[in-house]
Image (cartoon, rainbow, N blue to C red; front, side, top):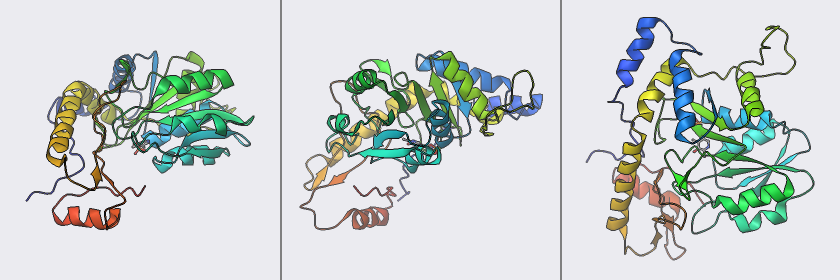
Length: 316
Ligand SMILES: *Cc1c(COP(=O)(O)O)cnc(C)c1O
């Protein structure tokens, strides 16, 4: 039996054609036409004014934290259940990550626990949409407003997803995406920051590009990074974006099929098909083992691997 991977990128659209254009024109590094086009089209796809392409989704989070001037002494609220990139961006900035446990039903952060964790040092809430269902955003936006907190929305797993008909990635002061190969659309490696705030957009652009000054280029008043996206990566991104709706439909169909076939098996909980604000897009099709099951996630994953299914193990 052929191994079943978590995800296989489909690169049979315009990827090759656009990559050839990069080679033919010689424009393979940053700031090429595909980078501009990818930023413009991506921003429009999530109802945003500005998009800043970066080298990966972790970099997008680092730039977002730095752009908001989060630093020593500040606290940022985030979920326990997410990738290390979220906490790493906060810790590297010298700030303190304050974690919120996962809701057992949606697997997203339990929003009822947030308010109790807000202190005078809290600067931002880093919202991370997990696996395929968005976080219930309205209560969080209301809290952020009431306590004057910034919202960083990590929408890396939410390409093509909506919350109450509005695109994920349109909710944060800054929202971030990843185009790693296992996401719904990919550039191999890549990331994007989106915002409607022109000042934050300018700060992100500057931080991404070593904080070169617009006028006196080699006079630097702040430390940035080189986290630019190459034109080659953006060329793949433009081609992938053309097919996003198709990929989301396919992922939903695969998710529905798993749910049909696994329904009724005792001892396991399956992902929610939908909530009252979104329908699952199954970035990852997770399975939770109930306490009554006599083996743990590691053994379960070994059993799946023996059947040629290679899950990623996430102990809860
Ligand atoms: C994939 C992912 C990232 C990191 O993106 P990279 O491009 O791999 O650095 C960040 N946050 C979430 C929620 C992710 O799923």
